[in-house]
Length: 333
Image 1 (cartoon, rainbow, N blue to C red):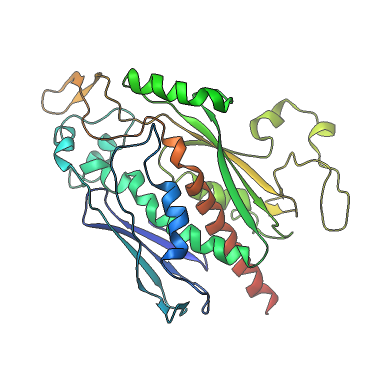
Image 2: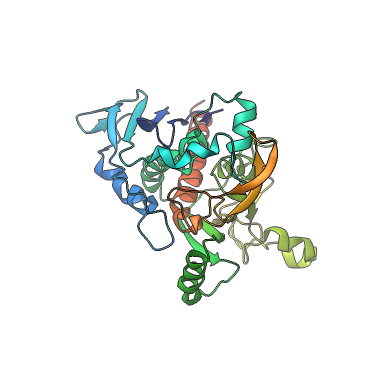
């Protein structure tokens, strides 16, 4: 549903063009220094503004309404709200009967018998990741105190790994009223040995679960990922070089048997091209019961991958904090 986590539990809510979106985080340890300013650096990274991102401008100012007192977390559920200030809901009125191809419009209409909020994708919108990023900023703060650092970056746009080409690729997409996808790589450094709960709660399983909840993510791989299928065991095996589990290579991406092995966790996610494009597309119309031309209005990203790195970091941080709290609970028994 809309909640994830075992001890560090994150619940997101809201719709793209509703009054507010937000997040409730339960299981936050008491005594952590926290203010709204601590969240802003990551929220700024998610915000639109760079060429190829949506023209929709929102302040994304966080409002902590519970769980913090005198500048410290209280141990009670932490609630953070964000106002939706710049909505043009009329741009989406034609999508009630004429759903966008590649988007949630059709499946949401069928699943919820037409009662879903269709404006801007409603609850399926990437706007809802704002709460994930806020929770991730808090999770990263907790992890940093334990020596764990998480960072992510775009490594490919439109299939091209040369960063100097990306501006041209994005410009071509904008000019042709189209969109392009990309690949984001994330790395978690300083992760101790032993996080993860096999079988069904392995690090890869839990983290992939959260990564696939990010709108537009179409693939996840750890370490060498799909390339490992073409390797021999003698090539793929990471030889252990010390008692802390460090290895000479990191083909496994920091995880063996679903448990962290002391090396950097490395994963990549494939981000599809934005579904909403200005090019006319032929797709089903509920009113006419025919395939008709659709012209999509509204403000959309030409390359949504540009805004995904900080969301991938949030997913990793939320997952790892949960595992860290579980590990500390075991050790106190």
